[in-house]
Figure 1 (tube, helix red, strand yellow):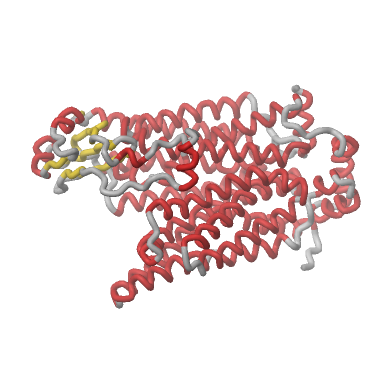
Figure 2 (cartoon, rainbow, N blue to C red):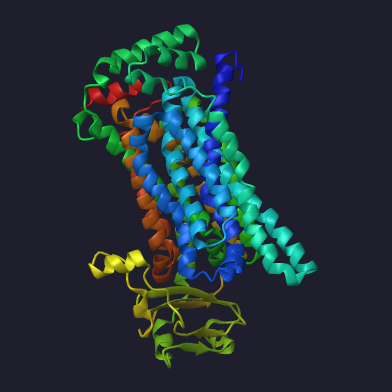
Length: 573
């Protein structure tokens, strides 16, 4: 492929790296559209349990965690380009493994390969961009990775919607073939995500290796050629000299341990930025947007409209952020974004708090009505307690099994003990025998008594309040996209000194995934016990720490080479 100018090479590099972000988004989002058809067809044909289906969903997370932890070491050993090619190859291979699966094991294996691919991409693509792009476009380049990531999420949703309409049409015309149509539907969803993987894998072959990785291995001529692909010849020679003066002689002899003093501050700062990025609650808001809107006052299709609006605003504001990140700088955008997040989350929390204060605490009443380890009440009784237009939210538990449910006018209240409960997996049972399983044993729910932990009933929120909640969350998503959404990948790749960048990014990204998992685990139980307001206030508090870190600790990196950024931290040790 003939690319005659540095500008053309840079555009091609951004295109290929952007495809990496697209794959990352597809990795995360594709299962949402396929899961209903997996449950309706393959799960019935193959007799899969609920636990096995949950493993299919969670396999991507497991693969991502494992591969992201090893990605830094692999990038150091084999190089950034080879690891990007491997990640694209694994993604491309995972699609036929999943789509042609004839049982549980190949399906699980394919999803695990997708997760491994996503974990590698999340580390090595931002790393490659930071080390290969000129300083003046590095922010825009890494921002494109985030932009295409959001596009990947939207594309996954669009693929699911397209196939869903085909299934609905087939169900109305030939109901007898519905299961076969559903079985083909989830396979087709995965097949449609294959072309971006092939494009990324093929495109990587036409890229140069990271010049900094080449120079670290003494390949000075190859490093210069790699720099000249995206820079004028004179600028490439000057930058090569700067890189060599800063790292060259010591790079092969000095240890890259994260515990050296000059590395501790940038490493901890990157970890703080990534942890706070997840602690804004962005993932939970996007995942439970429909539930939040329904609780806030937007019912039925209007809640889905709000969900679509959030994703659209996320994409549009990410485009704006990509345009601004190299003009206004990372520090400014992070301060602007985190400030907007604090205001938006606080306002949303106050709206829910005011609505929840108007509700009646009926926990004691419902606990007294428990009979036969269950609870039932007619809709007319609930109407007598809550009025004509009420909403009832109940959080209840059978031992370790907790549930949160909502009832509205016309619906009878019925809570019964679970007939079946999924027990530990083989791995979970093994760890429980040696007292190392941190999760409760769900088998204990079989004989546990019913406990109503929280029950609140009152007038349903008005649509006007629902629109205010939507406005707050639109402000939240816009603020996240303009600042943390784009700048987090820059913080991850720019703050780490060259000698620890790959391994440091792996550890920091693992922390990022850990915080995300913790927030996902506590979200529903917290909402069930205390309502939405405490979650919004907690996220606002974490974002306040984010704002302070961006204001007083984070250096501005716009227009600076990675070596100049490293010298900033070296001088402040």
